[in-house]
Length: 254
Image 1 (cartoon, rainbow, N blue to C red):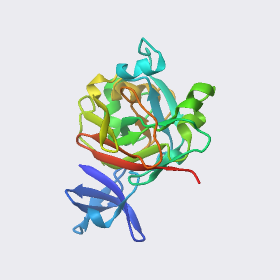
Image 2: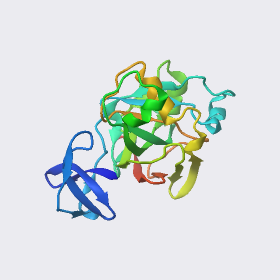
Image 3: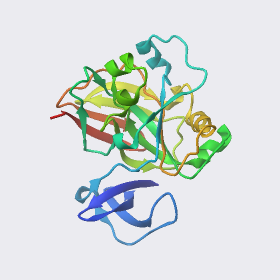
Image 4: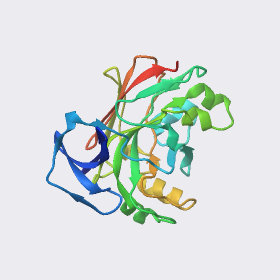
């Protein structure tokens, strides 16, 4: 199944995605829900970020192809997790805003796991049962701040630095998904999630040993290859097989 969060006029909620139609549901994918007879055209709604998380976990250096950009020859033995604030989330079609004092802001296309139920102390073989589904994410990063600050709170946590969407897809195999990032139509990242250093089950299990995961929480799974800076007017697309395309444009702060 594929779930979208949408707004139509004053109405807001979740719906099943059926081709070019949405079928609104009563309730949410994180609890009991029921679909009705009504459908609305996808073109007639605004898609929102598919969740409003209580927390966002993201992992650094989780593809070997990305290690060289940070002068790291060996992959970390444990997942190198950090936290992005929920205030960084934006949805499909919204603008990534470049902070005026950041010298370089890069895209980072990623698979994102969406937690489906409350969980703590999960073993790796239990972890995927707690994942509702998957969406596309962009771990936007201010590289100069990332290099020069002791903490990554602003390099990773600025407003608009966590684009998310366009929907949540369930029943996917997270170990074999094709991921592609495009900037202005040009492919700038391409990988398969089979190449993750620490797979989704390992990431979710590792995080759950430290903190309770809540429904709607997110785990960004890492970005591949070499990234490059964004500029005003760019259009960034993160395309993952079985999920869809997350598209955002880039603006500068005024």
